[in-house]
Image (cartoon, protein in one colour):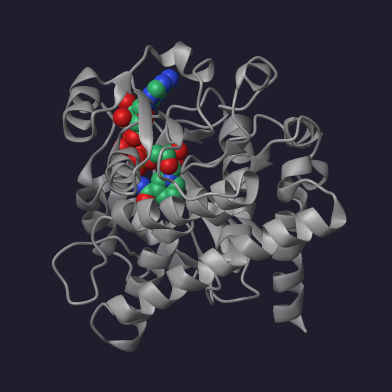
Length: 353
Ligand code: NAD
């Protein structure tokens, strides 16, 4: 299969590979769309087994960013970069400076930020070579940790899905929370404050104990989270939580959480729908984080400080967009993830007009 007929290529404007032997850099920057604005999406550092695996990941992630940014109502397109390497052993300032030069060479068509394996310190090195970097600290437009904003968006999304599926608020509803990291931790606090009962799991025992102490959550082993009696399953760990093995085990009617790529395959989204479950499309419900980053990009571009009111307004709008996805899915009798993809494509096409 060639690059152009790979299923992940779909509509990419540009795919850029850069190599800097002296700095040990091999990076791919995928720009899916700049229709709505400059492409924005984080940089992931991962020890990919092959350049093909890195390319597929970059393509998949950059298209997802186009859809996420469009659904969050941002004047941003979608892009993503991947650096091939082990973030525990192969990071150097020179590597991230070389990465910064790669970003700079695209002349602002792509803005980078944090993703798995890349920290604000790494981005500071990239910033020495390019201004097209968000997620930095210590400047007036800095957006800080996006996790609380992501958690607030996910909390509102769960509340909406519970209203739709069960006709009630969160008081007394049980939520099975997979992953109590940055987002999951904040989300647990919000759910607890709203009167929900929590069943939590994580592979990090310290994080688990802290969340349980704050919220009275029941702790279960990682694999047991799929079998508990809970109205809501909230994936907030890694991707692929909903797959052929786990779907049949879920007891509730709602799947809504922060994780990216929750559906192992598009087909599992259809199976989830056929089973009568309500799924909040991941890239819609978790758009709070990119809204926060977008505020930093806007601030840097305009020379203005971070604008919290702008973020709050976009987050309110995101909740309405999720409601629209659920409405259209109910009216058409179709899975929510298909409706969300359609709406994202419509928004990008409208921007092209
Ligand atoms: P995080 O790394 O802080 O938290 C993830 C947690 O999941 C960790 O505590 C980890 O120990 C746990 N975990 C890993 N494997 C597990 C397993 N098999 N079972 C149970 N727990 C497991 O990450 P985060 O920033 O909280 O993000 C969580 C998810 O949300 C990720 O998929 C991320 O891509 C997505 N997301 C995050 C943001 C954000 O603002 N941070 C925005 C959008 C999407």
